Length: 403
Image (tube, rainbow, N blue to C red; front, side):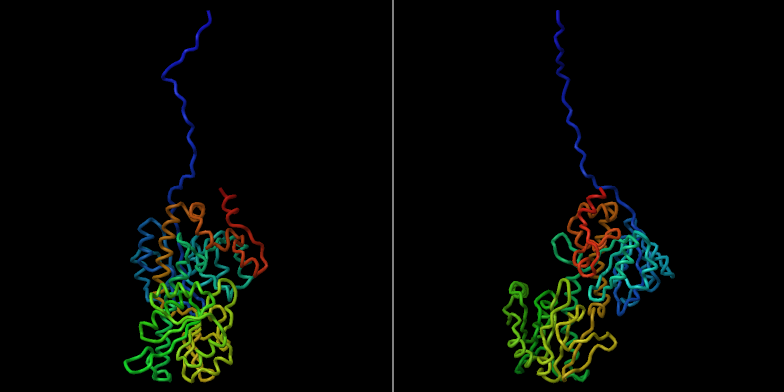
C-alpha cells in the first residue's frame, strides 16, 4: 500500500527578505577651515554657531588662527564653540573635508591632500586649467557654491549672495550720490515736492529684484530692463506692484540712461562672460555725477566702460560718471554673507555625517550632484570640460559604479 503524502497545516511558505538600500550609520567628519589668502575675501564659510552645532553632533572642526577675523568672528568664539585652533595652515589642510569661502588659489595647491573633499566657490572668470589639472592629479572631489542646488531646485548660496549684493547696491549708490563723496548732492529716493531719483536696473534676476525693492523703499522711480519676459513678470509678481519694465532695446536703453541718476548692471550669465549691453557711447551721454554700479563685473561686466576696482579704491570717474565696479560685493558685508553661507553649509555637513559621508549622501540625494564639478579627480561639469578641453565624465555613472 502506498504511503499518502502528509500535509501538515503548520507548514507555510516563507517569503524571502528583499534587501533594500539601507542608509549607513553616521560617520564622524573632520572639517578644516583655512584662513583665506585670496584677493578681497573677508567671508568665512562657517560661523561659530554653526561650528558649535557640528561639534555637538560629534564632528571635529579645525580652523586656522584668525580665519574669521575679517568677518569679526574671533578665535575665542570658535574655540568656545569646540573647534581646534591651528596656527599652521598645514594642520588645517590635513582635514579630509575643506570648507572655504574663496576659490582654491595656486599657493594652496601644495597643501591639498590626496582624495580630499573641497567645498568652495569656483569663480569661473578667473579659473585656470593648470589649477584644475593639479586638483585632478590629487584625485580631489569638489563642490562649488555656484552650482549647489537644494531639494527645491534653487541655488541657495547664490541666492543669498545675490540678495545681499542687490540690497547693498542702493546703499552704495546713495553714498556716492551724496555730497560727502564728491557726488551730485542728490538724496537717493525723493521727498515731497521734488521729483524722485531715477534708477535704471539692467537684469531682472535676484540681484535686480533686491536692488529694485531697496530703491522703491527709498522712494526712487525704478525702471527694469531684461531680455527675459518671464523674469520681468516674476520680478513684478515678487515685488507685488507695477513697475516700468522693458526688454533690452538699445535705443530705449540709451534714452533712459541719459536721464537717470543711478544705473545698475545686474545681468547674470550661467556660464561665460556677461554680454556688454551698455556701450561707451551710451555712458558718454549720461548725466555728469550719475553713478554706475556694475554688479556683473565678476563675470566681465555689462557696461563697456567698466573695469575692476577694489574695496580700498572702489570708484573711478569716466565721462563725468562715477563707476563702482568692485567684484564680490557680499565680501564688503562679510558678517551677513558668512551667516548666509553658513546657514546652507552647516545642515549639508550635518546630513553628510548622518548619511555616513558625502558619497553615501550623493547616492540618496540626487539634487546635490549638480554642485559637484570634480569627483575623485574626474571632471563632472560639462561646461568646465568644454571650456578647458578636459575629459568629461558623467557623475551619475561614477556614483553608480562605486556601489
